[in-house]
Length: 307
Image 1 (spheres, one colour):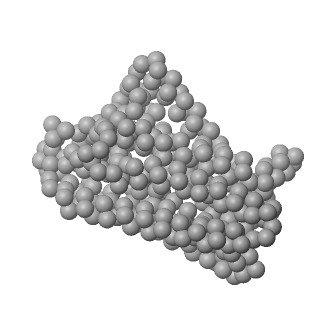
Image 2: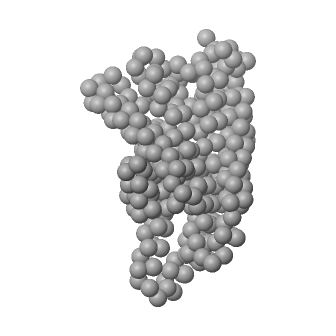
């Protein structure tokens, strides 16, 4: 039984994403394959950027940070989910739940700001190429990266701490495959109205401010590209920016669907599928998008394999 004082020492139950049926076993195997491929793809991206001197530029440094965030994000979710499924156990401790919430919000928030920094990098490279070494210096690159991690960490710490401060004296079953703040707050036996409002405001700030800056950057890029005389230069600029916009669209679209949609819309099962998309499937798409559509990365991979 769970006492009214809280959840200290009392485990939560994750209902999970899969049942022990043949079709779900196949889907689980697919998730494991995607997880392994994601780790390999993002690790390879980080190695290439580190060892190839031609990729020692702010754009690729930011891309290596994105790969590291994606690796960490998928590693926060899949190992615990796989362990629960294979051992036929669904429990997770309050500490483990808090760590998952903290890491997810930290990594998600950091990625919001990092994608904003990447859009600024593309804006400077295309609109102010002669001033690029000054406007996107190594010092500034390190500063915006550190700021992304710091802001994401603050958001994760505040929301994880507030979520676990509520008493949970009724159902301990979380209808999800990982600990997510909105799913956990629904189980609290206390008035969570103020916290839910605070969480909604945080989502607006963490989502719409970076997204507005990204859209502003690409609006300026589009205007500059359309003024270019060379069709080849236009094509290269569009190709580089389209890769980033695909990543932004996938990441922001799925998270806004989960966090900014009214509660009455949709079902929890649909929410779990969408959550699986941005926590499991998106991390494997980023290295594929950037490597397949980027000549410099493909060239670095070829040179690395030749060695």
